[in-house]
Length: 267
Image (cartoon, rainbow, N blue to C red; front, side):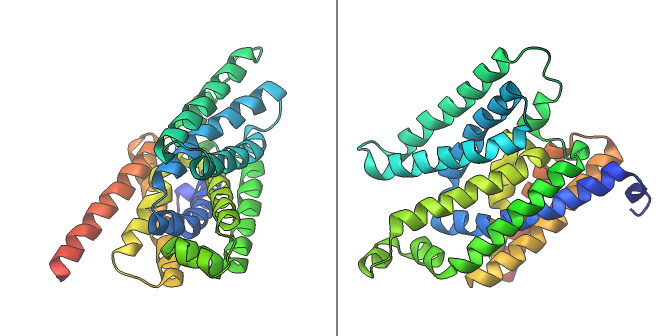
């Protein structure tokens, strides 16, 4: 294990795995508890539009994906609450529009796009230092927001109607939570890609939810499980020369199945 850390790209990969585990552990807990997995998947796919825009403008696609993902999250949240169509229909429409916009921008970009697949399916082994810095800053923002709005997020996650009766601006808080989901998606794109990001956002939190009901402790366990399973998947992908993003997701899925078995044995 220590031998592979001699390579700088593996050092960056393990650092990325740790950083992404923080984001998915904190925000993923709210996603699982509030049951907004589908809208989170919509945000992750819509983020591809920002990646395409970044290529078209000649800027870092990760930076371009940040405002695009947040705007997509806000549109999904507002559409699902204000427009008289079902939530899954609104999410599906914006989901497909985001992907289509990304493809159009990439087609309009002159030249060859060399690492497009890494944004679709992840490429943690190619994460540069600049992206690590962006991921670290986004993690700090997520941590600060979770601390500042802990009570509000908890309120809308467990009983949004009661929180509204108590005078809480639930729509604003909900949109803020979706914005954090958008930032988490951006953190995870380089690790597992747009298509697989939903697994990393939900599985560690789903494992923690089986054993712990206290929200704060659930977050801590979710972060720990994310770190263990993500770095484990990365190590396995290195040993057997497998696609890193897909291997990480498979290890996460296996971890979830093992946790289900353990829970059954404990009953």
